[in-house]
Length: 189
Image (cartoon, rainbow, N blue to C red; front, side, top):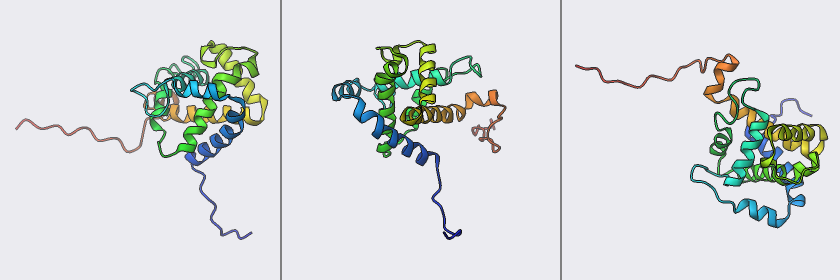
């Protein structure tokens, strides 16, 4: 192999997109019945959401809260900054494969993960924080597709959490080196 060949750059979006596409194709399609898929998709989106439905937002909020709880490593948690809405607003409509991957992961977590990893016949979003955390840990340890789903959700959550300005003081980050300019104010002449 010629060492001078350029390798494709591995961007964050490319990584998330490919991980979630693979996960969605393998996990969501065979295990979720058409009626469950239709019920989740038709739950309706709220006016504040850009791409996710209200049901998908509810599941994503539960997942992000389990991964980054309030009073965990920092006083600020996922719910404090509405991390699920932040993720929804940063996803781009053109990235249909990435969005479908996120939706597939959320459906798997909501409808199949509680029974598969905790023996509970209830939706993920209806569980308490300890049960949600236990399911995510079990998925992390399970290997295969569940681990891919966990890793993708964790990566998405952590990336958008640590890029939020409210979290910076807790990690010792003062903000960008080049400060944003102050708004122009007229001088009273």
